[in-house]
Amino acid sequence: MGKNTTPMDRRSFLKGAFTAGAAATAVGAGALSGCASEPKGATVNDKMATTGTYSFETAPDPIPESDITSTVDADIVIIGAGFSGLCCGLSAAESGASVVMLERSDHVTGRGGSIYAMNSKLTKEKGYECPVEEIAQRYKRMMGYHSYRVDGSKWMTHFHRSGEAMDWLIDRMTTASSVGGSDLTPVMEHWYEDPEDINGEFPGTHEFLDGPNGLGPDDNPQQDVCDNMAAYCVNAGVDLRYNTTAEQLVKDDAGKVTGVVAKTGDGYVLFNGTKGVVLATGDFGMDKEMLEKLIPWAAHQTEFGGIFDGSGHKMAYWAGAAVDKSETPTPMIFCFQWRSITRQVRAFQGLMVNADGERYTNEDNVISHGALAFMGQKGHCAYAIWDDDYANEPQWQNHRYVDGPKVFENADEVRAYWQETIDGPGTINMNGSGDIEVKMVKADTLEELVDELGLPRDTALETIERYNGYCERGVDEEYGKRKELLLPVKNGPFYGIRCTPWFLTTTGGVRCTSRMEVMNEENEIIEGLYCLGSMVGDMYCNCYSTHFPGHNLGGTCLTFGYLTGRQIAGVE
Image (cartoon, rainbow, N blue to C red; front, side, top):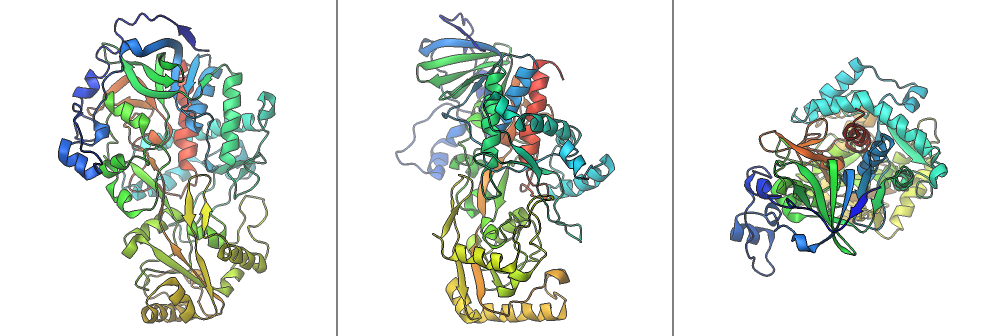
């Protein structure tokens, strides 16, 4: 447990705590500067015009020493009790370190459920062990998708150690009732196999079901995982403090990060970490300035966006951290309207047209790249069109889980699912991340369908007729989609839905080594400071790919969290 001490002997407290950060280059080429007044109601662009910087690039004044009410000492201070922070805290505590974990909300939060790991005991049990030669081939393809502007050593660390980390997690999730949690069942998700070996997914995605929040694929099983991890952390002696908001990192005269000042219900508290401070505060998607600066194209072309406000990124920048070497953190962008067609988080492979009623791509894709494909179209959207016979198509009615039941047992279940969406409220909620517009339409004729979708009638009907001709001949003369996916749109009733890109979260933003040590612009390690989870830089580039579903949860959260806790504790 953390040790409280008052009054404090802090002769060097905050002395030069932000001097290194204020003088250092951060966030690409923008230097941190002094505070400047801003006009009331200023927009992001107004602020830039007035100050020459975004507000997050300006380090705040140090919190006065007189405002600090107490100190807490521990080996490790972890900021953020999400999945990555919980994995780090538990592995560190189990390795003998004293840990204080700060969480600004009153509970832990988990979202999603897909956790990717290779060569775990579950994948081996199911017959999907992966040798290094095979993963090298997979990773070569993935490096190409990310333009090789990623840290290959991080990817190989995930390959070599993710099985070990997953086994560690499985052992705890299946026996969590011993610490007051819920015993969960590990399962392995099914994946899309592309016979062309271009856009297929790879086996290795785990989920934990049978908890109160994860009874099936439409639920949020990751909440159960995080609830269990929090129970394990407390049982292992982690000092888990809720309603505690970290605000400023603390450096000593040598530039080492030694702690953090956090705001609690009783005032400001200084938390000292003698072995390290770990930032695990999630993404920055809720901060529009950070999006404008770091990922402007995603900020302008997607709906909604982000889960957290980048508070950890800002603290890191103020302490001298640099952004990813590629200078561009990576968004997760998906199209979840497709889920209302197939009940699976995957791309729709039937006919897609843009707002002009024209095809624009080969529809055979994964959900991440498929969503990016229509971001450049008019209105940043596209329209899926299919007919009643699509319910009979067996290729996408695969198993949600390996050895599990099918997604749909028969075509009537598919049609009932579509009708449920049509009769629904017009929105769905994705695991607590916000409401997504889902307005599926149904019509007896194609003319009625394109009119209801708001498409130009003549052009859209000509496109459908041309596409049906390709389907009859078995050759897609426009985009070369493989024959098996050329399903005509002929037999009513007919269906359609407007598809939009959903900006779920950001990944990256803080430059770090493969051991999660935060670095400055000169690629020098900032001693004492680490980052995890969605903050980890140079893990992805261009876009977050779903070829390894759950790679971020399995890599930067589980594997790197597990290893970093052990590393700082001194057993790695």
